[in-house]
Length: 201
Image 1 (cartoon, rainbow, N blue to C red):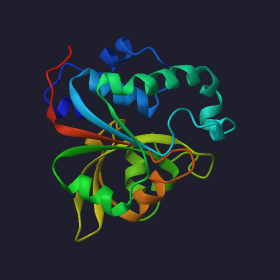
Image 2 (cartoon, helix red, strand yellow; image 1 turned 90 degrees about the vertical axis):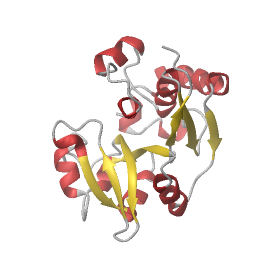
Image 3 (cartoon, rainbow, N blue to C red; image 1 turned 120 degrees about the vertical axis):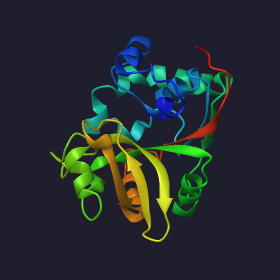
Image 4 (tube, rainbow, N blue to C red; image 1 turned 135 degrees about the vertical axis):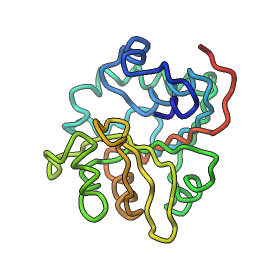
């Protein structure tokens, strides 16, 4: 979705699967994928590497041991690849500012269970793989923020995994805040600049 917004329409899921063989995708994987296409990316996270606190979480348990070395390597190579990595948490005000600036598309790792309720129910019904198991364990999912309506306090959101309707929704900022700060997310954010370097393709 972000790559398409920069005019690279030839990139689809099959193309990405051929390029990256990993069975589970971490935010650092996405950062490297985006950078591969010459896009400037800033990666904000509270944890550098695979967080050992998630070892017993159902969502991570199956892959965390196998993924650990790859994730550490990708973090180590991030600066050399041109990815700006910052270990920090940002406020809702900062998130609104980044999203409203027009300078970035914002990719968030969220706990999809937290997006149920006012403003999020319809989104979950059509996106994020539906609403099954929203009362269970953490379910990580990436969403794209492309605008913010300060008058209604809603983010304009797209779900790259949506099967219909473009995955568009308006979700209250307090729900986004809960979903992005849930245990399991490390508050991972990718800020993809609207400007682009020469592609590496």
